[in-house]
Image (cartoon, rainbow over all chains, first blue to last red; front, side, top):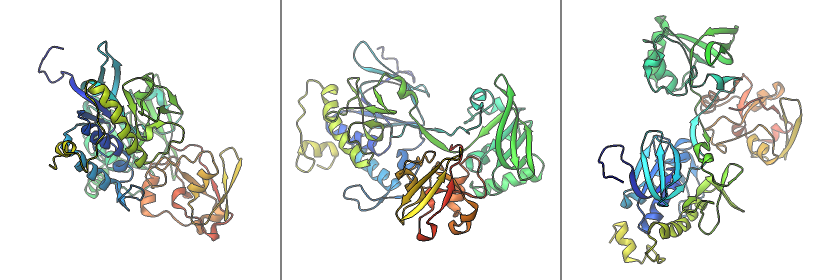
Length: 347
Length: 106
């Protein structure tokens, strides 16, 4: 590798961890104890995985030693616990390519263009990557990417379009406010005349509706019509009947769901969409690629955070031998080992 | 115990025997009722355990709370009788409850 200092030079590290949920975060800790440097990638813009996305305020009762802890508290505590190891987080990115190089290391790239070269890969991707929900309307796939958009990368592509935004949260409201000035027409569709978004955004949206710049339609989508990937109308069921609304750009915002994503294409043995591992090393059929937490499967598997923590500890012992093959791994306790305490910065 | 009947979109019926105090979603999962995904495991955070409460039972079951109404925004084909089954706790009063499983969860 040439030592080009440009921004797109690959990041060389010991281990890349896919997923910044509780198990991915704790893997940083266990790998740190055995001197493996980590980079962590997550598709969400924040750490914590399901704990932060699905139940930040819900109590968890089965984390040993913590009689009750919320998803967000557990995430915050794990971040504090792994601080000494300085793992770099790459948030809002999805790893979409992975191949083994001739040197035995793994070459990876994200959808944001970040590249990694690592000696080992740990998949801690939980239920998969959080992706926007696709409305279950027949034929919607044919319009995706051309007329149906789950995210707006460049606003300019929607200039002059007949835009329909569906949803009642902040994404739907924010895009209504941003796109109203540049769209040819903008229809906001929501199932009820109540919005979850920030009150200030709701007020601004209502003002645009009052000024005739946005049409608010209370109802639900039931069908899409168009040709060759070009959407022409969307049928909306309202209290006063069905209406075909002119639309060539549809933005549905119905939250997120979890999908296995590109992981399915890496040649790993799967068991009902979960990655098969052994229970000694938690390694996949590809040497050097480990899978821990909810994403893996082995006989007796339980999808518990505490099981993922255990898996992280055993995985780290095995990964250490790949990361530093010439170094003997001696099992030690954080309570008594002065070298571990030095790593943790407590000595 | 209470009996909960789930009617599938094709008309087939699943009857679940549920312990009092469980949620309707838990009863469905325990009896492997198709069409109740419950992706988030009952946290009222995903809207994939959406059901339609039978007209005769709507009053007894009651209305969705605010948080559940918000989450119903993420469900498909929401109707007046829509509820998230993880938010319906089974009481003796609900013995015999009938709910319909929607054709599609998101």
